[in-house]
Image (cartoon, rainbow over all chains, first blue to last red; front, side):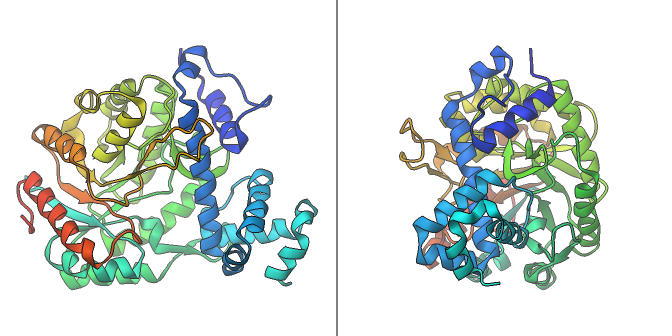
Length: 120
Length: 297
């Protein structure tokens, strides 16, 4: 039996956020049996990659940060990606979302670097 | 019916400069992803034209060649839909249609907006009636901007069922209504390579008489370090020449695509240099021979 579309969408959203976990609904066994775990992981990776590229394309400051300290910027992006649901379609919108997050308490670990690259 | 050959325009000046000769002499139409010609001043604001909007239009005016639209953002299969998001797209598309006069408008099968999250990557839907209705609704929305619409078989990296069942489900989606299929042969090749099915069995289950356009392109492989399993998967990255299996698959389908109107070559910007241009030209000529006509044949 094919999954209810609402259940499937909830499962898909959870999978793309971070791989499921307790909050992810179960798919019917017939459906779950077909899901290629590597393909699912690759899709999650590509979603993150597209968002990363969107951010770099929309923010010269982010691009500079990545150029000067790729390890630190990548860590900041990973935190951002895990904490903030993707709501932006265009690079400029993603840049605004990132800057807002950077100024929030959730991004405290990156505060110093963030203020250096994104001065008020 | 004469079948034309097109090239997907990239919002990339280096690409446009390198391909200038090809665009003037070897194609019959330009394919445009409308979203690549827009910008957004602020979240939720109406989309505005960016510099490529007028550059692509100027190319059309200079050559007298028409445009087709292949979108990357309306998210055909999203359910429930966000009316405000749809209106944002339609407002811009309707305005664009008065200028570009797209012959047809396609986007990707699947959903790239899930529970409000903008994922950008088309993801598969279950092969059920609810997803079928969601897809048909998305196509109806697209028709508000351009009357002739369709969807492309996407390159999914996982499947909520037997992948061959997807082809039969696609037939069911197209059963009612006037929508078309953009048959992307590299997407079939990519999925078949990764999932281990016979690509001919997949395309033979499709309603090939509904194919309005074909896409041919190349791809690459993922890095073994990307996945914990170390497995390498084929990617639909449009960054390499069209491989022979894709040409073979296109030739296998072509005789049964009675309503085919165009074959489009896809190659992303940043993946070609001057030395690659002759090969791109040869790929366009090969597409023209497959089409049975076209300027470059």
